[in-house]
Amino acid sequence: MTNHFEAGSNCQVFNGPVSGCVFAMPGSNVTQQVAAKQEPEEEDSELGRRLVPFFNKEEEAMKFPERIKGMKNQEITKLVNVLWEKGVISSDTKPTDLWRVLHDLGYYTAGDRNWNDQVLFMKRR
Image (cartoon, rainbow, N blue to C red; front, side, top):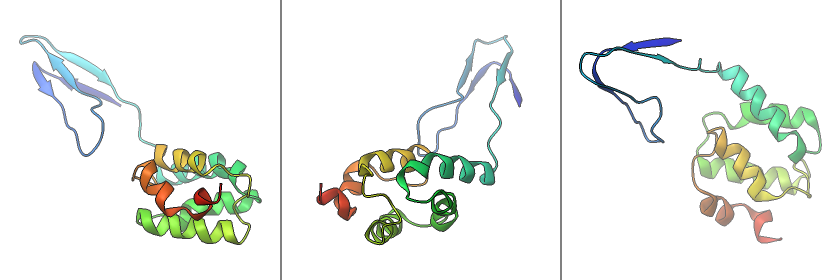
C-alpha cells in the first residue's frame, strides 16, 4: 500500500510504539510505502508455527492461537498453566521464551513481570 502526504505531519500513535510517521517541509510531497497488514488467519498460523517448539504436539501448537483469541492476559496465563500441568506444553519450555513469542505477536500484551507472577511453572524453575 502507498500513502501520499502533503506538507505537514501525519502521525498516529495508539497505545504502542511510534511507527509510520511522516514529516514534510511545506511545499513538498512525500510518498510512503506501508507494509500490508497480515490477515488474522496468517497471524494465527505464524503464531502456531512459532509455538511448535514449546508444545509436545504440533497440532496443539497450531490450535493454541484460536483458543486464546479474545482472551485477557490473565486468562491466557491460566490456560498456559493448565496446559503445562497436563503435559501439553513441554516441560523443557522456558517460560520467558514462550512469553516473548506471545508478546511479540500481540497476543499477550502485559509485560514479562506480570507473566512471571502468574505462570506457575516459572516459579518451579
